[in-house]
Length: 228
Image (cartoon, rainbow, N blue to C red; front, side, top):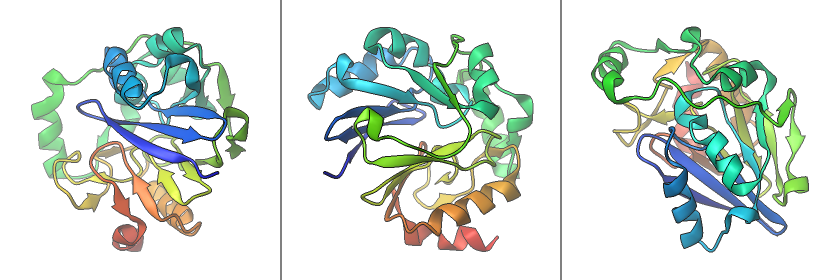
């Protein structure tokens, strides 16, 4: 049975519920303090806290793991993160070298938004630290986790067998999701590596791309980005 994707808007960043035949996986957790909102949205879809079997963090930025510790406490689900971003989650703070603006308009927007953006999160020790690809059937979802470094060293995406991809900040709507067209991440550790990861992902023929800021996008909408 194919897994379904439910997009949950939490303000700055989207969170995703993956519903499979054998359980549910939560991808990312938003900024700190979003746990009540996320649990409320899950309940609206008939999902109880105990139905969550895994919390997967796509990368080590606070707007993606900020509520992970609180949601682990409420759901009992293990938190998984790539080894190269695990220390960020343990410390609860961004790595400065992953916050390099990818364009001048983005740099200006970041300065304007900085006072309202979270820069720290409750630290936690991840339950699962991984490196390569791995399947999600153990947690009830038909799909796999794929390393897609570039935005951060340990960025990952999820590719479901049904063709949907959840990619964190590999791609986002332009100007942090404020505009509809897809574009580069606002900040990146290694932008060229980011595009290599996108090309590898698109070679796997996903149909729909879900992103944390804006979207979703049809895979064909991202082809121009791969020519950079």
